[in-house]
Amino acid sequence: MQFKSQAVAKPYFIAAIALFVGQILFGLIMGYQYVVGDFLFPYIPFNVARMVHTNLLIVWILFGFMGAAYYLIPEEAETELYSPKLAMLMFWIFLGAGVLTIVGYLAVPYATLAQATGNDLLATMGREFLEQPLPTKIGIVIVALAFLFNLSMTVLKGRKTSISLVLLIGLWGLAIFFLFSFYNPSNLVLDKYFWWWTVHLWVEGVWELILGAMLAFVLIKITGVDREVIEKWLYVIIAMTLITGIIGTGHHYFWIGTPEYWQWFGSVFSALEPIPFFMMTVFAFNMVNRRRREHPNKAATLWALGTGVMAFLGAGVWGFMHTLAPVNFFTHGTQITAAHGHMAFYGAYVMVNLTMISYAMPLLRGRSANSGSAQVMEMWAFWMMTVSIVFITLFLTAAGILQIWLQRMGSNPMSFMDAQDQVMLFYWMREITGFVFFAGLVLYIGSFFYKQNEAPAAA
Amino acid sequence: MNETFTKAMARNMFYGGAVFFFLLFLALTFDTVKNLPKRDHRENITESVVRGKHIWETRNCVGCHTILGEGAYFAPELGNVYKRRGGEFIKAWIAAQPTGIPGRRQMPQFHLNDQELDDIVEFLKWTSEIDTNNWPPNIEG
Image 1: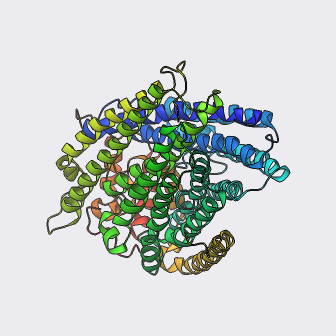
Image 2: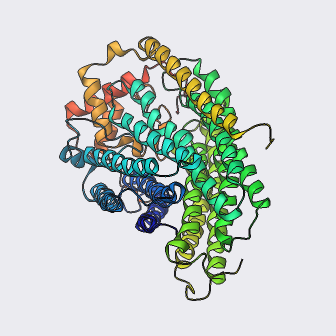
Image 3: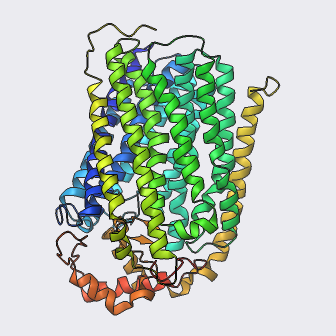
């Protein structure tokens, strides 16, 4: 750690991991409800568990991004953070808003929560991933603006690198596209059209800029490869991201009432969306192979390589699998989507955050790397979680293919629930694999406390 | 990567590509919004449909169901449920929840009154008439 103010990243990382645990616990509840339908009903109905699961995911990833930015920007700008105090204030506001929102979901019926929080004044709730009450949404905007102000001021007074510029563009984009969550017309088609401006332009747009900048930063640090080379890669990758991903939004506009030409635009451009992810994989391996130093933090290197591979598999390959309109006609809104969602989110945004945390956390705790045995434990956690998510994805894919076959093909299609009964075996296997994932997560957290007094691993 | 391809060229490709494709996206959006009235039949969005959508949102229906394929995959597609089941069945079904059958997936009881039940049906009826390019593949959704 080169600058004192980078220390504000630490609570962000800790909060991110804590909320990650909550996300997985609710994932396990939902997975169990898929096989034993009335589990915890009526105390935690499926829709509530799902809301908690997905909202915790979004919030902890945002915590991770913010922590990463607070760590990365001062080091790139070679100056102290503009206001560490503001960063800490925003931390508590964001955590408070996040926790209150989750408690609200769990404590009262959603309709009551909506009424109590002003949803009748400006209705924004009850849309997938944007379920947050109005005060939470406004809180997110305030936190994001204060955060961006703080970072922008830091960059303005310091060195301006391509990495910090790309990160800032990504984060500003994140804040701007979130504003579409306040637009909720009573026409469902328009509502859906612009809902994707937040959801798609986040995860297949500006978030990839953030991902790229974080990965590039860690790769510079652990490989010692020349900054010019890494930043050139970064620009090419994010150029391809936006060239393919913006019009790629069209793959969501096939069947929601939008014109037919989106089937062409959406299919062609989103078929190209794997390119930037493939480049990311090549980039990560290339830089590690050309490394000019042996960094003692082997675990961070593993996470960085893993991000490249898993983001390509989850977002690239599993995305491509069902993105062409004639295929999507059958797969749209099935377990195939769930399969893709799980591996893409894990491979891209979970793993890049864990890469950053793996690299930065030892430094924030005053050492260049963790002890060898702690790193071995962390790498076991890497493999347990990563292999689990691969199998979860495979089981959901199998469930999805079977679901489509039974419910959407042939002359005598089954009803939704009859088809669900037929794919139960795969839901059981998914749930069991979920527990392996959870064990991996416990091991991961354990690695932060395991033999920390031993000397750091040698290079 | 090739030495003749410089970082400045990569950066220009990023800015140029982002701006060009975002403008194209805006143009397509403009055209889409202009053409939507023919496809979404917005002249049929009555007060009741508007209230129905509000009920749909405030009961978080999308937390279990899909609508036009978007949402959760725990319960049936409802974009075409009006065509599949009809309005009376939908109202009776919502009123009868939860079934309480052990081990089966359960839908909460939302205590909707007759007006609210009519509104949700009107919303689902309007939704079922949107031109979705013939999706879903069959009536089962």
